[in-house]
Amino acid sequence: MMRSKAIIAVIGATALLALAAGNLHAQQKPVVWKFGHIFSVPKTLFDDVAMKEYPERIGKASKGLVKIEVVQGIVNPGNMFEALADGRIQMGSVIPAAVSATHPRWAVLGLPGVLDKDADYPSVARDVVWPHVDAEMKRRWRGTIVNMGAFTGTLFFSPASVGPIDRIEKFKGLKYRSHSVDVSRLIETMGGAPVGLPFTELYSSMERRLVDAYTSATNAVLGTGLFEVTKYAEDWPSGHGLWFYVVSEDALKPLPADIRKAVLDEFALIQRDLSQRQLAETAKSIEDLKAKGMQFIVVPEAEKQKARDMARKVVWTNWLERTGPEGRTLLINVLKTQGKTL
Image (cartoon, rainbow, N blue to C red; front, side, top):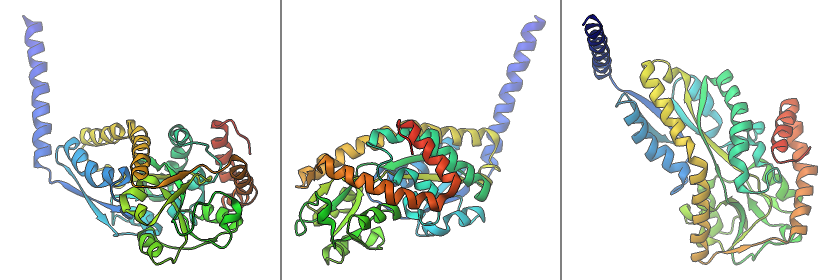
């Protein structure tokens, strides 16, 4: 009898604690996390997660205590980290290729020839790149990475007026808009002329022939309508452009412990199938682009190997000079996962 009363008392106390916690959450005012989304890439997973899934899923996981407000253009890629550290934003999106001039180590997977295929990126990003970047993010800006993906299906693209670029000699004199410093350096080495241009201005620049060709991901070409001014896609070595989302640790700390755990668990759930969704999106975008008349050109292997050799000799060497011992160690660790050496 005494044992039954004790059990009932414990159950009652637990229920009261749960009720008290629920009441406490109900009494708390929702907090607004400003999400500094550096720029939109329409109809892509990069946009969908930030602009649709985060507000809904994190709002639900936090029982309405966290409201994510996505604001485009509130910060530019170069000052996002300082904005996170000083509290102007609580979340932000990062594309390492866009900040590779100032943070070159983060764009290690963007070095042409490091990875051979899209399916190689998820494990090396998770096991090697994520921990490296996250440690620096915590140390310098009190941020933590919560999700990481990639712009898979990154290719070279050219219009009908230029024709398919399937030989290195065809790069000579072509004005190229590239997605990263390192790919621009490869294009220059192959004879092209890199053009600095925001991605948002690429469509109009192609229309006006201010640029002759460009590099991008297939889902971005589809989502932005660039296929309307493009005829060919060529599979030159182009690197893999990661993207990731970061949350301020100063925004996480004030949350009740159970809510903070629920929010972090939800980010982990999003990450669980993110790479599979990304690869599926890329495969579908390729089929959709083919249906719209785009021709996918397989560059002869001998030409691609020449490009890889150029990348190792010029692009990798320059990257190693800019990143120092830390960069060298990171690149070696990445190459090990692919059975390669420096």
